[in-house]
Image 1 (cartoon, rainbow, N blue to C red):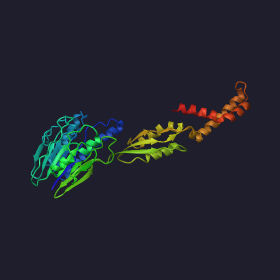
Image 2 (image 1 turned 135 degrees about the vertical axis):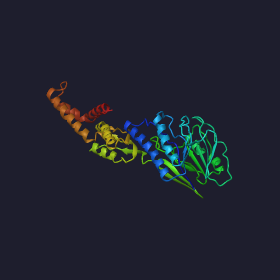
Image 3 (image 1 turned 90 degrees about the vertical axis):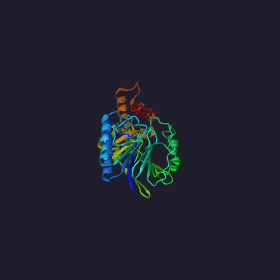
Image 4 (image 1 turned 180 degrees about the horizontal axis):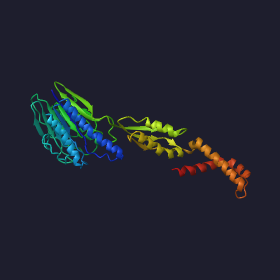
Length: 372
């Protein structure tokens, strides 16, 4: 039996700049711990090898401590006689980690023979490597053969609708008759081929809000059959949720409880807020969101798409009915005391009774504009 872990698209050193400072720090620590946990498992379970199908480092990484961390962790594998095979992808092609203990495949088709298996693979030679994978060699023996590439295959090229990198196709890969094809570059987990021997593990750790659900790597065993098992690298997941906020009594308490109930441990949620609210509720909303984020340890981010309620709805709100009643009382009292261009309070009351809806609408529109 040959057993190995297959991972790709770790993008270590990613800065997570679109998140707040507290969440950025948490993500970086979690990203680091996920890799340590994978190394620990590989050693504990005595796998034969770890295969890294490109983009181990992110191209934005300029901190030498990131490289030192990876070298130290991978050296732990080598110290336990676990082989490391790595191809460079478009995001880490410029990084040259000094790792003599690892097999870093060249930018030309490389073949590495081991007593119980062989590796066939190829690294990128530049960031925008528009080559295609050349025809793969075919082997006539029974030794398990494993392909290792940072590559796009036809279904993904069509889905991306952009330039293809080190491209190939399912048919070309199947024609080589390899026992397993370890691919990287596509951040969503997928498998192809009649025997499901072509695999993308997806990104090792969530690198953006768009990468939803669990992330991790594949535990691959080749015996008389192929067995592939997904292992989450971290409990941390991104999620996209939606909340419809309802205007009305106890808005602050109801909204706080509604949003906080959406928080889950180990989940970074982006919540899109919808709903029609009166101005007073819109004024209160930012503070409610701040308190929810604080209680959830900044693990919730909000996209506020709430809108001002239509005037027809606002006029039925108890807050505004009380406001308008108070306005009427004060206005009539002032007219009774001072007069209004010779118009008595009684005369104004008669006029107001006929035009009340129009006057109230003007008042509400003024208030409405003032809160936008």
